[in-house]
Length: 428
Image (tube, rainbow, N blue to C red; front, side, top):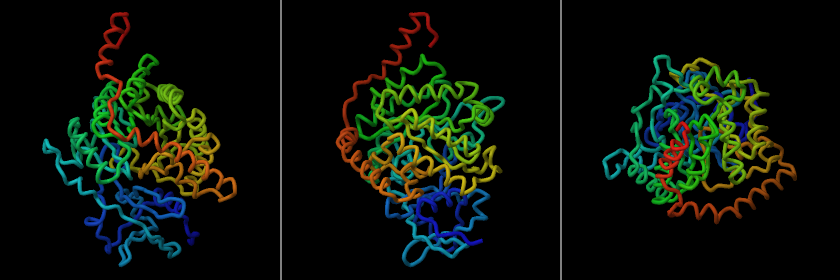
């Protein structure tokens, strides 16, 4: 079956849906970032960059999953570099293969291998503060069904990160890889995830200087929402709310731990609370496309943009070893519909996508990646001009946040809050 030549955005989506086969001509062991299974396992693919006239696109392409073995795409090494070939139409697409940074092989002053502390996912530094998730550690595990965290604990990463190690890795990543954004994530920590992340936020903001993102299971009740204000005082610039599925029944079925401990509404409350206090687009709602019906995913995007946040849309990947390993990869046409809607919804809501410097997330189709999916009308050009203006105006603010600075927040505030709550007869 012949298909039309893909533009960069279409190729990105098709590769996420189809994966890629590796031709013997490739020397990826020497040329590429290592394929590493950490946390949920979604980064267990090959990092690539697709050049484009609007922007270059970063993506983490499935290579180990079963469906990738039947992909029409193969990656080849030529005298000119790497290219992806489509067997359906003989098209060839030049791609770049990002090299593994030298600091991956370095060690901290305490002797820890740096790549076991943090890894690049696209252009940002991902640090999983604790490589465990309590949903896995029950007599009847309640893990999210797409996830493999319970199998990866301590395998490719240090299980619990030392603060000084994290600071050293963030500093090296900033100096040598141009990292501007450090994202801290953790699985369920019995309701203490935000507090677990807090010391790292403060340390990196004060000793390194970076834009800082935080993702953790939100508090179960409104009484815990103050922790987000506290984290902002400690230096957090962005909060992401990974609720994955918009249909409440699908959420409950596929995310049993989250359903039992906090429920879907907790994610909505926390996102709405934080976004109401922060600049538009400073929060994100993270969802998985390709499991629920397309119209449900479109509603999720409309909800997220409607509260002023930006949608982080991951194309479902049936990760090897997960409970959903044998669920089919999504259809390309459906994912094009989803990502086009994502871009249009962001523009209608005035979400300043792509404004932050050098943040390209390889595990998703970034909202501004999807500009390749819409006609290049006069309105489209006006949108690009507006976004360019917003980016220029925001540059001084981002530059300030990326300089090491003393923060006003205190780590002790959490204990003080708990003492006051107990004195008032409240449960902590």
